[in-house]
Structures are given as structure tokens and as C-alpha cells.
Length: 71
Image (cartoon, rainbow, N blue to C red; front, side):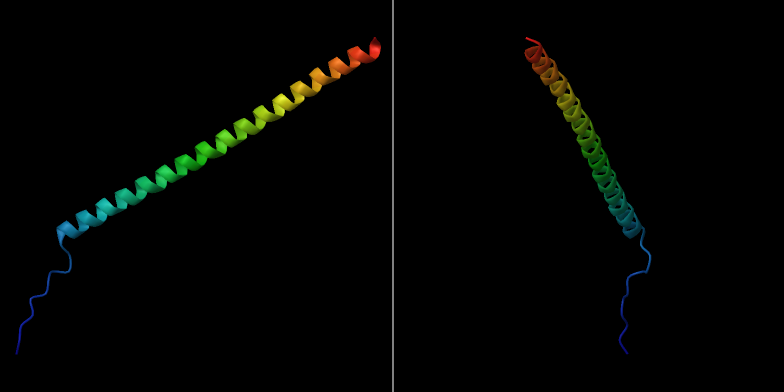
């Protein structure tokens, strides 16, 4: 009868490798989450900035046209 040399079920280098893979996975998730929040906040910032510009130019146009109608 033949004997098979099976590797041990739990090897320390495998656990270190899985820990390394997990840390890479966690860092990727953290990076993607950070990029998502940066994009979300810059989108909100630019949307607010755009609305401020729209309101500002609206008031300038109102002042210009109200000045013309008075003349």
C-alpha cells in the first residue's frame, strides 16, 4: 500500500499569506471609500459653488436691468 505525503492542514506561512492578503484587501477598501468620500464632498462643494454663482449673477442682472428701467 502506498503512503501519501500530505501537507499539514495549517501551515504558519499560509496564515501569514492570508493575513497579508487581508491587509491588502482592507487597504484597497479604505482607499476606495476615501476616494468615494472625496468625490462626494467635492461634488457637493462644486454644486454649492455653482448655485452661489447663479444667485450672484441673478442679482447682478436684476441690478443692471432695474437701473436701465429707471433711466
